[in-house]
Image (cartoon, rainbow, N blue to C red):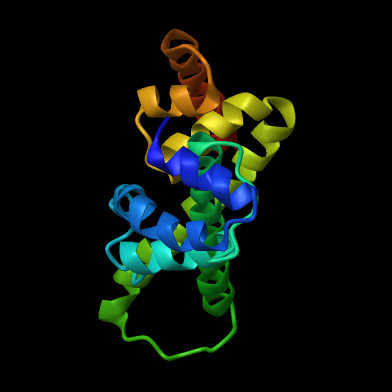
Length: 186
């Protein structure tokens, strides 16, 4: 059994020291997932992978970790926490752009502002489409969250969901087609 799984079981049994031991073990993996996600973000994104990991850790409970079923459950929740953090940041920036905290922009800056706006809008559009997809196909939507927001490989996501790789590949193909269609509706 993996060390992480053992620590998660100890946390569930009430071992307070186990939560302190968990972060060093999962930190590098969480940082890798965050870096993979951040690599797909706009260059104007100011949030660093380390900050994303720390905020996700706090949202997951910090040193007061809830009862996790296993390693896959933990990393699935971490991917969801990272997703929500990025969505919240995009919504805040979008709200500021649409009237709040107005600042005069020079004409040369307008092109960069448009690029930042498009990325936030794309992220929010994916989020909204994914929420709709989750109502129709919850397991397939979880695969998308693990891949898109968690940065997991198809093989790792399949293992996390407990499905064969072939099934995960079919789900991924279907999910991408569904989301593409939904995001390109006029």
